[in-house]
Length: 167
Ligand SMILES: CC(C)(COP(=O)(O)OP(=O)(O)OC[C@H]1O[C@@H](n2cnc3c(N)ncnc32)[C@H](O)[C@@H]1OP(=O)(O)O)[C@@H](O)C(=O)NCCC(=O)NCCS
Image (cartoon, rainbow, N blue to C red; front, side, top):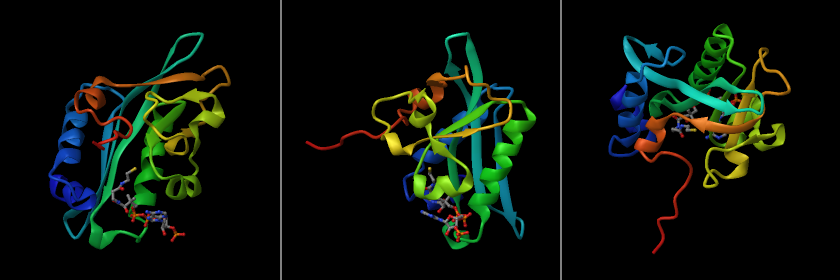
């Protein structure tokens, strides 16, 4: 998993560190789903706890991050299958919505929508509005809107939104 995430994101292992820390959380609704090819892990998606700060009460939700596919296996449907399996997992747990930060060009055809258009507020103003995505599931009810709250691991690793690394 570390190897594939580091290859997929082309970093020094920061995303793999985040994924490990998210997987180590004691969230009952969290999950790591993997895709294998010939006994090798070639795809990975992590789900961890999040919440909707709705008027009525705090609502349990999930955050999908990170998602990565080994470069040699990209564009063969693995990312799509992992997204689908992640939403199925969320649906089986009766979670009403799943949130992520990502390219709408990739996620919209997989059934994701712009969060702000559905009356959700992103957990940071540093998340570009088009990239704040939600998948609404059958357990969702119209009152379940409001600010999205990420779990503390995303903040501990400072992996929320984009930062301006200019001078
Ligand atoms: C993004 C990523 C997970 C996609 O996984 P994948 O297995 O290559 O994607 P799939 O093969 O399931 O693609 C599903 C569809 O999206 C399209 N697609 C794939 N990558 C895309 C991209 N970057 N932008 C837009 N569309 C894309 C595919 O063409 C396919 O459409 P099609 O069926 O009409 O051909 C993978 O490219 C990756 O690991 N990237 C690096 C890490 C990353 O950016 N993760 C996402 C962070 S939010």
